[in-house]
Structures are given as C-alpha cells and as structure tokens.
Amino acid sequence: MIQVTELGYMGIAVKNPDDWKQFATEIVGMELVNEGERDRCYLRMDYWHHRLVLQAGNSDDLEYLGFRVAGADEFEQMQRQLSEAGLKVRLGSEEEAEERRVLQVMKLQDPDGTPIEIFHGPEVQFKKPFHAGRAMHGRFKTGAGGLGHCIVRQKDVEAAFRFYSLLGMRGGVEYKIRFGKHVVEPVFMHCNERDHTVAFGLGASERRINHLMIEVDNLDDVGLTYDLVRKNKIPVTILPGKHSNDHMYSFYFRNPSGWMIEYGWGARSATYQSEYYVEDVYGHQPESGGFGMPDLNK
Ligand code: FE
Image 1: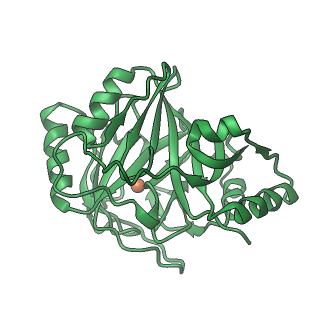
Image 2: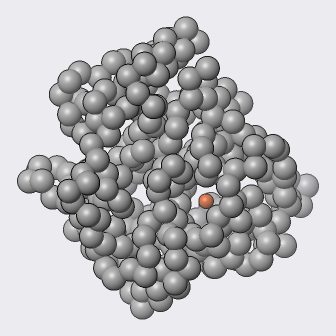
Image 3: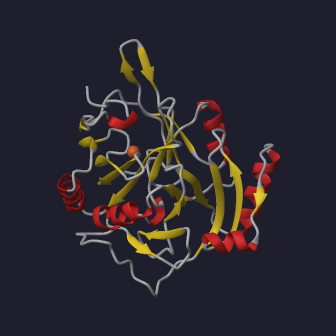
C-alpha cells in the first residue's frame, strides 16, 4: 500500500488578507511571500516555497489540504490505489501543478467534501533561507513531520477513517471525553513521526477546520507568542497545557478568520500502537468559549 508521507501544504480562504498577513508574520512568525498575484500570497515556515496559501475569499475556511507522496512512482500507484477503491480522482494539469509549485498533483475530495490534493516534488528553495516574520528564538519544526496537524470536520467519522486509511494513514480513537452521559471520541491519524496529522470526530461545526497546529523547536517561542497574543488582545481559546496523546505543550488562539492556531513545542513521536486518554497531562482549560474544542482538563 502506498502511503502519504506528510501534510505538505494547506490553502485557506481569508476575508481580510491584510489582517491575516499581519497576524501570520508579526504574531505567528511566518514569512510572507508576495509574488504579485492579485488573489493570493504565500506563507513560508522553512525552505519550501510555501506551506500556506492565503487566498482572498469569503469562506474564511480551509480550501484544500496537500498531502505528499515520495515520488513519481508512488504518485502513479496512489492514483491507482484511490481509483480502484472507487474514488473520483482527477490528475491535475501542468498548470495546476505549477500553481502549487509541485511536480505533479491529483485532486479529490474527502467524505466531508474538503478538497484533498496529493502531490510529489515540492519546490524547495535552498538559496532562500527562511526569514521569520518576527524575531524567533528557534525555528518551526517541520521536517519529516510535515507542516503540522489539523482537526477537520467530518460528519461521517467511519467514512473519514476509511478515506484517510486509504491514503495510507493509521490511527484511531485517542481520547474518550465525558460530558455527563455523552462521550466524545475523537480519531487521530498519522502518516509519519508526528503523533497525528489529521484528526476528526469533534461533532458538527460550521467550518471545515477547527485548528491548525504548528510546532516550534524552542519552548521560548511558545512563551513569546503567548505574550504577543495577549498584548494584541487576541482571544486565547485554550490556555497553555500539555496533551496526553502527542505530549505537545501548547496553547490555542483565534486567527483573523475565526478558527484557531495551536502553537506547540516538545511533542513526542507517534506511538504506532493504540492508546487512549480521558484527560490531558495538565492545563489546556478553555477560555473565550474554547471554539468547539472539548475540555480536556478534568
Ligand atoms: Fe491539536
């Protein structure tokens, strides 16, 4: 079976590009790249041409997720794997691959209707060192773990599990969170050393995306970001704490589109064997309503 190797890039539509540019650089620390395209600009986190595409649009939501496969052979085999499973896959044109700065791309949808892209060969710009949008103590931790992880909406959790398994991901329920008689059992899926790359099962939501987690390699950048978020009166939605599944020390705050960024440090690798938890290690109390995240702090 062919497996995707990482979440390589993500496209988001934003109602207010100027707010986002300022937020992504001055608060989060990403590098803004403007190539003169009228409807979009790019955000870098490492040597890649980009990790995020900011596209002007009204949805203020996730527009597509780009998953990488190792190379041309794997790309071809993945296309066969998905078609044989009955999924509708469209091979992107050369222009579409160029648009994403990759060698080849195919496009399909996950069971919730979120556009999914599978690609190989991202443009990596070793001539252009990453230049953080604001002072940083360290670096974004991407590498083999990809750009980060995201929690997405999936109305049919079993269908979503089958779909992401077909991309070669593994995983399952990692939390059982009790609300009186009601239990929420979110599902976490991994495709590399990162504990999870995609997660779902939080229930209904207006948006496709709940949060994007990005990781840094220096704890002081979590502290610095926290101070900047507070100073700029950006709502913190989940206070600093440590998750039981990925052991990430993180906090969550609102981005200009109204969904969340999780800013983390210190995660452990995927366990490759199932485990579940009923609460977090410490912290992570919700604030400002928590934006659809369950309370992991008992
Ligand atoms: Fe997370």
